[in-house]
Image (cartoon, rainbow, N blue to C red):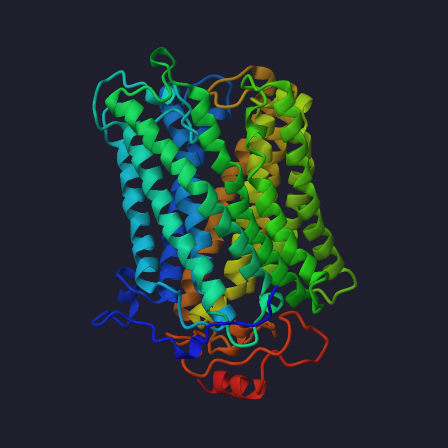
Length: 563
């Protein structure tokens, strides 16, 4: 790859802030083109929906704490798990990672903003719109969709009440808008990284977070149009009685499964790749060592991207898939263990004999790494055809999925918040509250999700409101874990709110980290380095090497301290 950069960001004149836009707290509630404001808008809104999705989960776990369906009606339960999954994926994880992209990519590469600031703001404002549309499904006759976050036909194209606007209609509309918003964001992130890097920042001087963002957004550009098109066809079948997926009209419901999983399996990597980037950024900082195998780790990100696009049938082993296709996709699914394993070994090698600083951010990284190793082992089990057919519709899959989605990805999100909070708010968080948040979250996650694996291996089916009493003990433990995760949110919210309001003022580089963003004041000015963009002269992980990152580094350090 070329190490030269053809675009000089010092000549860019970003049209922000929008003329007349507020310059105080009100900017977070306005159409603002500053990527840092948009990043905080994404993260704050996503955390609100984390609370919403968490409340739905605790109602479900309250139902499952006893074998019979005695808390909510089974049809209501179906609506709850559909909304829980949809909210957590489309209203929490995807948006909050877009928030990190907005906050980190421009300062990490020395750009003043995103390549298309207005498109960036428009992409964000679609997010609360589809959030309102989705939550409105609680108010329509029949309530929210009960067909799950995957919305398989023929269940998802049933409309027994006959209302044009129903829960499934609103679900599809919200998902389609989410897809459009994410495609707009992906175009912006990819263009920004390719075109707006600082002078001297070749591809192999690019921070790993930006590599993983590029890899994840490439998946979005390839896969999301397929899911969005599949959802539109589903909407036609539901609302206009077409027969794309109706067997009685010549349609094929399996076609939808192919559309859905072509994107939705790689979507896990859209979420986990940026978290791999966060791990790769934080481990060197808190171990005080260069990232082991930087170039290989960077290339492995795109290895995951390529392989993730040829594994979707892994979710359809028990859907009448021919044996030859099962074997083929079993192999491709297992191959993903190679690039992900490279990353895990690189992180462990980075930590090996490092001078570890166990800050809250580092604790969440270590917890996320341990959980991911466990999830990787169970993931290889599920990639194997006989095991997958045996446990495919049991709670084993639920436990595995949540270990990836919550115990790895959400742990990485928390680590990123604690690490970069001082940079973008100008305030330090309280470490005591942070470590209490970590302890409760780690214990709660293990108590919640490990018993799910156990129940699944014993044969407990998923997506049910009632179950055989032999699974009661595992479900009691899982429910207690879920409630503990709810309690863990209290110190987190207290910490974020009180730190931002009255926390100690943050210096420009409280963790002694290496990276362009740490050469900026805390919080950074509107256009980061403005016309004084530094020239990069070395890689981003030179811990212990005593090499400056940029030309005349002392000038930028002094300027950040004086601001």
